[in-house]
Amino acid sequence: MFLTNEEEKMANGEYGETIRKSMDILIALGDIYGAEKFVDIKSAQVSGVSYKTIGQAGLEYLEDLASTSEIIYNENGTISDKSGIATISATLNPAGTDLDNWEDFGFPADFARKQVDICNAYGALGISTTCTCTPYLIGNVPRFGDHVSWSESSAVAYVNSVIGARTNREGGPGALAAAIVGKTPLYGFHLEENRKANLLVEVESELERADFGALGYAVGQIVKDGIPYFKMQNKPYEVSNGNLKALGAALASSGAVALYHVEDVTPEFANAAIDDVENKITITKDDIVSTREKLSTADGYADLVCLGCPHASLEEVKEVAEIVKGKKIKNELWVCTSINIKEAAKRLGYLETIEKAGGKICCDTCMVVAPIEQMGYEVIGVNSAKAANYVPSMCGLRVIYNDIEDLLDFE
Image 1 (cartoon, rainbow, N blue to C red):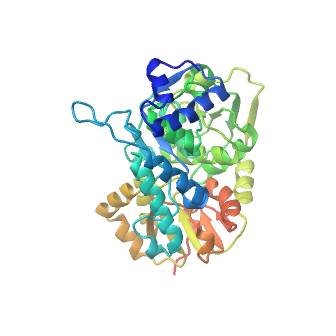
Image 2: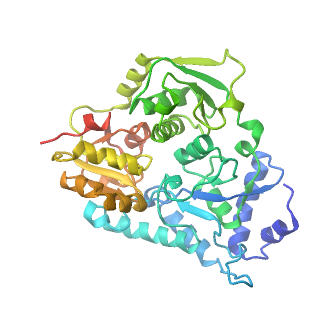
Image 3: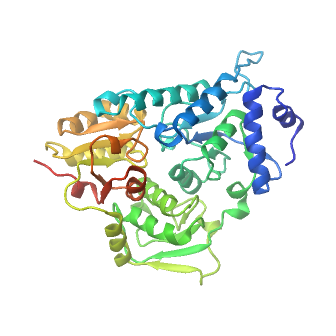
């Protein structure tokens, strides 16, 4: 890779060990993927947060990295970008527990304390500890065409596809390193020529609710790490950001999709259309129904209904509140979201409505990265194809995949 004089100094350790270690990671990635140079980034989103996924070794690595960071101030009193901490907008992926209320949910105490230590280490590195996989809902919102370094699979799919910013599907260490130095290697989806579609997907029926996740799951298995271009029967105004969030999350979990396009909906569709019409698949209503059935590994009653994978928006929390208003839920119910969305839901009365019905809003975590397998549950109800895909393998529990109303049992 070509390095500027300033980048050479960073790589040689002239700005401290934290920046040097970060540059080592990024230069190695650039060499592996054939990047010619670095590009400045506007934001980062860092995965590798839950103690369940990174363990003691990950915690020790973060604490060691934080111990070598040093804050350097500019003459005007602002923090220098050579301080060894993130000075761009940088947020964390979901943790393994609700950081503030882990005891109320019954999370294991030892696990919860380790989780707090992990978040404290990230905080010392300048990463915001608002733990969420939907940072675009709480202020980490790049503009169209911005270069960013994001790592959580559904967030990557959303920021590339729905917002039109540019990122590769980074690993946690790579995104953290990019956050610290404010740069990432210029390759892959950062380059215009790599953002064209390579599979046309014609959807023959209109979709609603959990159908979008089923569509993403079915197509992700076929396209793998390719770029699908969807032609849908739904009118553009019928496809919400929540639908796109669910679609991208499923594409990224059953395949490894980091970018997709929806005709007349997503911002780059006009320049990304596929020319080779022979490279095409058709998805029918029967395909959607079959996929929905395959995503369930259990039927009947769910011990815990867990919504918000990716984390719920305020509109989605409102929807849950309207469904349960004036009722009593037999299942346990968690609505997973960020602390920011929970506070807004509290002000608007949605939290009170959900709690009166017997449910809870759970912050900072989700059913995939939390240690729910240690908490006495056997069957988890989800409306997320991503969660339905990961819960059996990561938690060893059975799942029921369905729309919210069909997952909840009322007295």
